Length: 256
Image (tube, rainbow, N blue to C red; front, side):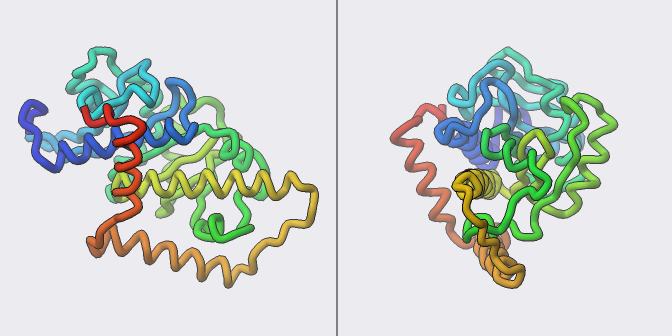
C-alpha cells in the first residue's frame, strides 16, 4: 500500500515506533543520534520488504510518527517525509535480524552505560533479582568485532542470536527483538534496570547472592507467560497503555 494511503495498522505501527524512540529518550537510554529502533512494515505491493527507521541526524526525542523513513532490507530509502535520509550503516544489524527472524516486528539496539558495562564482563547478566531472573537462559551473546559495518558480521550475529529475543553484544551494548514494538520496549526497559541493579549490587563490594537456577528459570517462565498472554493470546497490555499515557504528558508531539 502506498505511504500516502496508510492502513490503520500502519498508522498504529508508526505511532508505536515513534513512542518507542521517545520512551527510550525519556529514560536516558539513547546515544545522541546513534543506535536505532526499527519496525517491519507489511510487504509492498510487489512483495518488497519494508521497514521503518528514524531520519538521519534526529535525536530520539525529535522522532515522530510522521517523520519516520521507509527503507528496504538494504537500508535504501523508499519514502522519506523528513528528507534527511537514514544512516544505512546503522541498519546493518537490524536488517539482518529482520530478514532472519520473521517474528521480529521490532528490533531495538542501545548503548547505555549499564548495558555496555554488563556486556563488558565475562559473566554477562547474572540472576541477582526478580528483574534479571526474567532473562535467565534467555540471553544470547555476540563477540565484539569492531564497529558493525562489516556485512559479513551479520551472519554471525544472526547465528549467535538463534531463537532468542535478547542479546548482549559484547563490549558494545544490547539488542532486543519484539513481536510488537511494545514488547521490544518492555524488554529493553527491564533489561536496562537489571543491568543497573547488577552494577549497583556488585559495586557495594559485598557478596553477590545469585538466585538458584531452578528459581531463576521458574521466574523467567512466569515473565514469558505474561508476555505471551499479550502477544499470542491478544490480552490487553495495560503496561504499554500506561507508557503511552506517560508520553501524552511528557512528549505528546510523538504522534504528529
